[in-house]
Length: 232
Image (cartoon, rainbow, N blue to C red; front, side):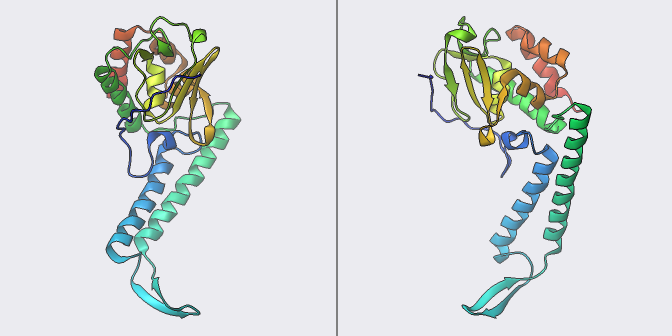
């Protein structure tokens, strides 16, 4: 049976979308932010006025019902969100034609935040970082264990993760390693190879990914520091 652990941890998330939603293969960070702005405006209007626009009422078969008029800020936010979603679609279509899909799905600020969170996680979890294994007991080969780590949970005692696995974990993805398997499992059960998906989340070139995944623990921390300071 897979090993699991259920102690919850605190993740840095936006009010609606966490990094897993932003990097699920269909939404860029910019589209997620624009959708988030629509949702947050709606919540604010609901809290202040009961809804967007001037309040009114209309007579229906069920009696007088509250209505709300046109809200210019809400309209503008919704228009911007639709434009960003359309831009995502155009970008993805072009990327598929060029053979370069998926594109960088997180903004530079998101990627720097994720790199910093990985460094913080390593510092606060002594003994749980080991570049020699995707996820498992120290010194154990990938094919020797079946281990599962759910998003938001702590690894079981004795279980160590490499940087690629920590990236996917902090981005909100479930992890599973087993004989011949090193998977990150995200929204709607989307499944990626851990190394491939961490590379996409951090927008690394193939060479950068090889250097980071094959670095020792100290070298990995240094490379993460460089990523955390990167602004483009």
